[in-house]
Amino acid sequence: MYKVIGFKKILQVESPKPYGRILIRFQGENSVKNTGTISLSRFIALSHILENDNVGYNPENNIFYTEVEEANYQIAPKGKIS
Image 1: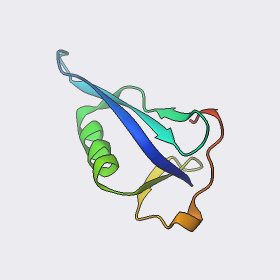
Image 2: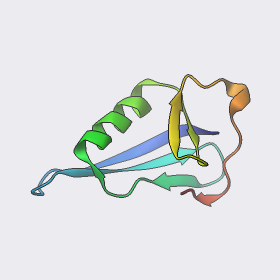
Image 3: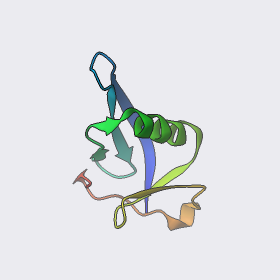
C-alpha cells in the first residue's frame, strides 16, 4: 500500500459533460498516479477522501483506503503508477 502525500485537481466545467482529473503523489521518488478523465461524481468522491483523510492506495486492486496504519505503507516505485 502506498501513502498519498499530495494531489492536484483539475476540473473542466465548460464541457457538455463536466469532468475532472486528479494527479496523485505518493511517498517515494517522483511516484504519481494520473486518474485520467473521470466523471464529476467520481471526481467529487475522490477529492473528498483525499482532502479529509489519511489515505493509502493499493495498486494491485486499484483501491484507495482510509485510516491506514503507518506500518502498512511501502515506498512507491519511481514513475507512473497504474
